[in-house]
Image (cartoon, rainbow, N blue to C red; front, top):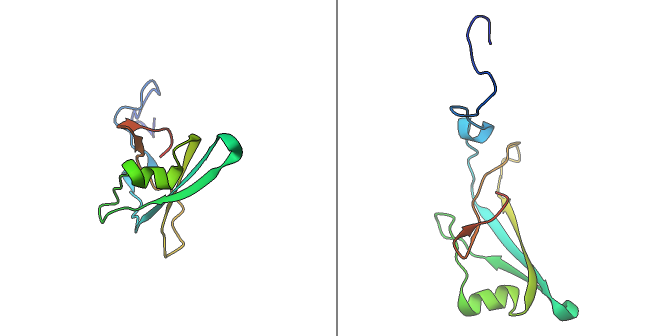
Length: 105
């Protein structure tokens, strides 16, 4: 309640927005780095190039070059560019591998 106005009983988040839904973070660009390692302790560091819509895809030889062909573990480090250095909110993103949305973002 706010004064005499009922807001919510807390049983659902329906109708509510997160901070970035209410006030979206304007993102200049993202950088996506891929870190991978496999048996034999070999490690790879690659970068995913993004287009003007901030989308990127790696397949075939480009994927093998970025993360090797024997990687057991692959991690993505996603950062966003903020030349003002004043944004204090999280900038959401979606990362998919083989069409499946990955945790994070």
